[in-house]
Length: 258
Image (cartoon, rainbow, N blue to C red; front, side, top):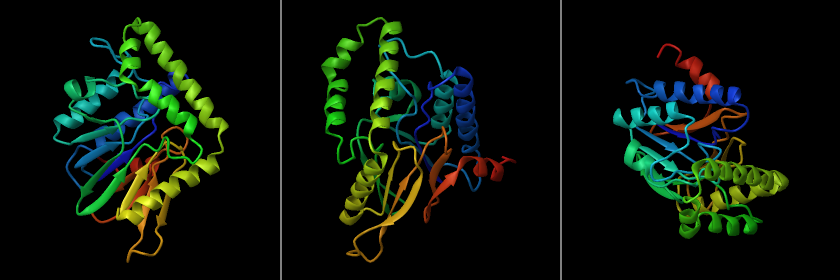
């Protein structure tokens, strides 16, 4: 089984709610490791695992150390973990790859899984009217800007990262989500028409499973938005034949004995 999860936004809201959300993730990571029908052969994190993240040469944010240890445990169990950076957790450097063994991707990726062609992305910047955000992203992710940022004291730098995250959320909430959703669906359809079997993205916090294609191909492809773990608590899984959107609560019930 291959799992695709996104938009946990660890660090968002009250510490009490944040801990509950982290506990769900820890439970999920623990349950995908045992051998059996639900055993994970690969895990993809499609962005915004954290509501904000910025690391220094010797310092990382102190919260969510349990999640960091759990991810290291997944890798140590022989399960590859790929992490696509989102618009809230772009401040990664080397910690995840060197200390946890997680492969970090700064952009979209395409990958063959069980003979099927997947296109994976977080989804930010895919809206029709996202020019302003794309400019902001290019500035924030600029190597010089990140180099200057790391010279701030961690308490200031991480605090600044949290403020940037809040501003990004405010910007997104003011946009027309219907328009942005159409933008992501349009992008997914273009990729499917190029020959991809499946396109998966997050970012919108709205789970969606939709068959797309212009009919030029014998079989249309499938676009899935993995939703979030804040309100919808959804993710996607692929058993080698079928890709499906799943609810976390139902999945926990099915695997209660694991």
